[in-house]
Length: 319
Image: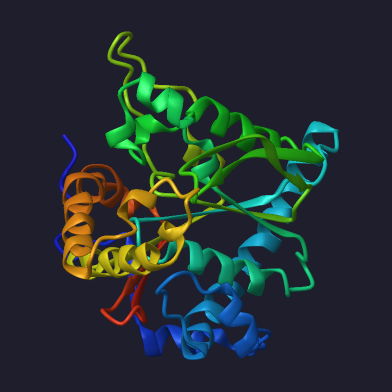
């Protein structure tokens, strides 16, 4: 019988922001204020201080991992006596709705693309792998959109398998936040990236047994990741950010007659806040509690955000 680990045991090394910032070493700052402004999402607050203290040390760590992975890939090719081709280094980014994953991914993409070792960095979000609205309605999953079962996991795995097989031309479905649906007959084309950033809510989900066969799947999405990052924050902060973002969109995007949420356009602030709070409590909070947050400990790096969106601490997995 295995003995439990000692109380002081931890899979992570914990860093305060100041400690992490010192690991930047001589990594140059390659983003300007203008670049950063163009990468921010709705209500996301990312400062140049965040870039210098957090993103640059992280990009240095990822560059070191990338170079090591390329070396190991060459060893395998030599052993097998074949050249598979340029297989991208895949970085997963997970976390709740409204926690700032998309902005984080875009800033990281911009920084990594400025390293001479890997100038081609592509970003794909799992939104495109959601089932279309019509199919979600048919499967009675519309109220669980964003939950693991609302994604076409077979298509997602095929995309990642093609990437890791060194396929020169990758295609991914396109999602429209305005239409709240997959865009028919449109796809994102990716030409053999050095690094592929894969961002989404449930990308770190572990294998689960098929209730009909009691057999776990042979492949899951996270099998294809070389490195994973979880963007974390206190639940009360994320709820406030979600409500703030909903109010911003209600005054802008929802005013467009083509918006799926156009019916919210005339709500006053109090009414809009109540709607946002209900959506958060009934859907997003449930998904975070039951599906997203339990995967946090599977990430290589966990970034903890403060109430003002700044990153206050980090955890680096030791093994």
